[in-house]
Length: 125
Image (cartoon, rainbow, N blue to C red; front, top):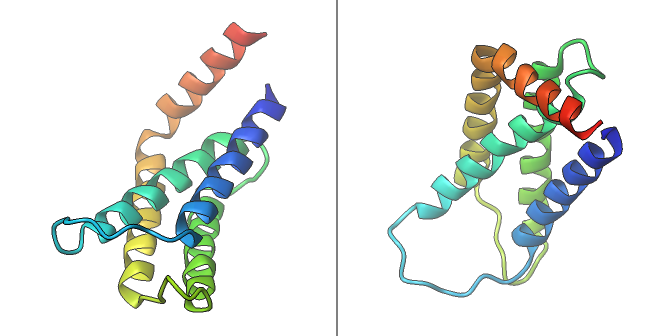
């Protein structure tokens, strides 16, 4: 089961990396909808990190926040060097805010998240 968690985590991070670096078609969308997408992606990244590593790190909530913020900032810097993408401080702020809210949510719902994860692990084994 642990291998499956790590594979899902790698798939999640790889998907974010891929989606952040491929060309995006122009669509008629409300202004700043991309900030909402950034917020949600990094909110979920914090949760996925927590569910993957909650038994590995002592301060996993802080590690989830740090990892998510660093990942979002790193990808945003990479976008500066991609011709069809661009660097945006607004995107970094949305990433950080999503990671922060995700980490606070983890702190608030920590026991139910661990219980759900443990219940699922018992069913698989």
